[in-house]
Length: 267
Image (cartoon, rainbow, N blue to C red; front, side, top):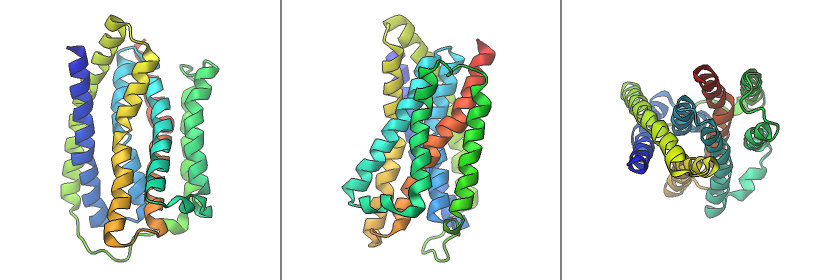
């Protein structure tokens, strides 16, 4: 029964992210004429909501290691998925664009950070919280400084969106994800305790599943560009790379500190 609850909770979160949260972001992006960079960053944060739900719920359930491996494995898998999408659409030359160096650097550091913290047994230290928050601040500051020219809104737009409808989708999606996330945590705890499954395996499984939104959004961006005949420019790679970097940095610099604080308060 616990396995069924876990699967249903995960599927609910993933469907809600794709059909609700990301659709709401699409409406907002069109209504507010977001640039590919801003759209990628907001989507990246949104696609980290499953990790947030999983880590908070596992922290509340006292299964910290499984939740932490969810973050660590998800960041690794996100990078692999991005490279897969880039190679599939033969856009690998864009990754050497000088404007993308800082984003790729932060995406890579976000992969290493959780692993380093676990190696030195600092993953549950309260001192880790301000360090990670400062790390995210540095990322946002450097992105603002080095990529200011790439955050201008699009001057033209063939479609129109609705800010109100977008907000409605987003708020409703967050509510559904919060409820599903609570069931996800309790079922993960029961599986670890009753079935004696290694917590690392559970964490990697959660990491793979919660990375599925990134997989779909990476391919969605390139597919849409190909249909419009604009594949080959840097806008599409800009969007997916910002999606990746914001997702990985949100996992490490926002979700991790909040979940760790939650875990320390309840244990």
